[in-house]
Image (cartoon, rainbow, N blue to C red; front, side, top):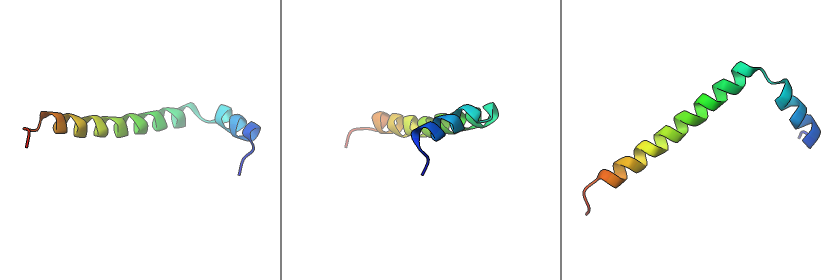
Length: 46
């Protein structure tokens, strides 16, 4: 396991493209969740 300092240093040395790729992945996950929630809200009441 990384120590806290090592983890911060690793994060700072991370390629910007990698950071963006992870952000995009996170937003996709978020969008899937929102879509599912939206479908649930718009479904007719049982």
